[in-house]
Image (cartoon, rainbow over all chains, first blue to last red; front, side):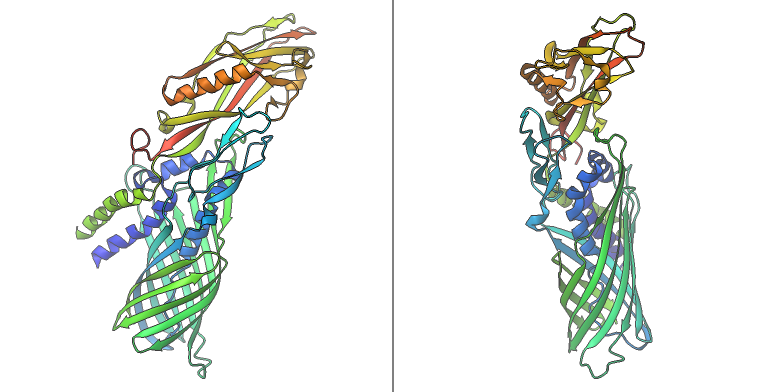
Length: 305
Length: 196
């Protein structure tokens, strides 16, 4: 168990490393230096897909059943993994060229894209401008979190996620903190005639790495499930909102000393979830697919009731 | 102890597997602004010919990008003046002793224009009628900038000359040149570059 506790935070950090590091050994420092080359306008397009995929991952895997006992002590511990797929439309964006440049915009790589494009000024071809290369080649962005669920009072349970990874090395691996909490309430207790378990839930999460990136999000959802012996089919609908904030001072000479304070809203605002949970006593294995603006998956293992 | 060993083992795995998901040798165009000002002598109006300046390019970059440059390009040149003067100015900018810019009015930018014209920076991208680039000078500039790819001690020699006319030139006047360039820094490279 101790070993698991050591591994989970590192797995959780893998998604962060892939998204926010040029390499695991030189994470925050190189990211900051890279981002500082951008003006506020330019950084949004480049990083937006990361906000979309990471935000979707943060809101996933909140439940594996809608059945919440009315009363009595029950507790479960899950390790939830998430994976968001990088779509082709997330590999390119329309960037601005410097003021006066013709063309005024050009298509170039996002953080998940290929090589950056070079564009020549139409009237003075010797003037050229280039976009950044993509950094992440993976087609899947992962995340993993430990999750504790405790209930129940009047068909209500609480859930919490928490990871903290201290700074490692001399500025190589930044401090990372992820915290999420939520409450779910059984609706089926008021609707006993419905042959399904129904619940509603609200969930809030924050994620912070180093001094430059801060992500917050919340979701409101309706959950449903039906148990068949060892298997539970579950699903739900949820509204969600995530925002990634990036703050730094730009070194772009066209905007000298510009304090960049950008908020990127995650593209996923609504999700439909469908999944299966296999229960073997107190041990559970579950997995689901989530469809919204971002298609992604979550799943994991759990221990408890 | 077991937990720490497991943690370290996964970190090692991250350092290898994680980096395989990071593009090897990706390029980040970093800002390479070359800023120089050339003083105009106070006193009677007339020619000014300040000493040329040698600008070493590598020190302009952040230390972590130095030595990792794969290409350089420029996307604008701006000319501005500092200080107030009621007279006129016409001038030239040279790179490595080759004419780069003609500064002034008229068809060939050889006609004196009011000094105040350049209080607001005049640039190539801004299609300023008061700044004209010479093809030969541009080629020399591009070549000089790209020396940075193979030579960390690469430099460009810049010189601004010209002539003022009108009243007495006060002290504190200067003509300023800004070359806006990008230097492609290689990150996560296998040879040069930032450590993996």
